[in-house]
Amino acid sequence: MIYIMNTYGYLGVCFLIAVENIFPPIPSEVILTFGGFMTTYTRLTVPGVIIFSTIGSTIGALVLYRVGMELTPEKLEKLTKGKLFRVLGFEKEDVEETVGWFEKYGKKAVLFGRCVPIIRSLVSVPAGMAQMQIPLFLTYTIVGSTVWNIILVSLGAALGASWETVLVYLDRYSFVVRMLLIIGGILLFVRYIKKNKIFPF
Image (cartoon, rainbow, N blue to C red; front, side):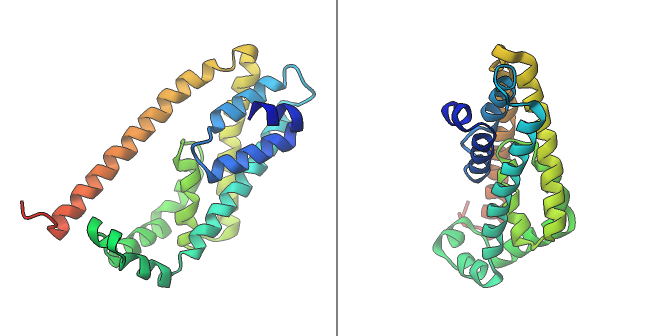
């Protein structure tokens, strides 16, 4: 990643952030903080890195939004009739309720979710499933991504050669988020087991 950024500058930053949005395991924290550090010894500027990283974030978000749009009601119905969904206890109504909840309450999740590791990428999928209006989706995505990018790029530039210090704290932040997601997933799984009485006990 560092080689790409050093070689291609702004375009490298844009490309890596776009890929990071589609494949969450690639850490935006490293890309953005190192991008900020690069502004201290190259011709790259903080505003430039922020702008191109935001463009990359938007491109990646649109790809996942499109993936969500492809999950039409017909495809969702087919998925819910699959063996995996039956084993886990999911029903068609559960998926419809999830999409309905997102339509009513979850739109702001696109805005705030852009500042949360892991969720910042995945939140685009339910937005596409719920057919969230493109202008609104783009607005929330751009605003949320810009805030996240400004914070990390600025920290990288301020810390200079010590930019990796930021990663220590971001790792803790990401760990908390992961634990909350895991706990939430376990609670949902238990709820579905009880609801559908999968096990006799």
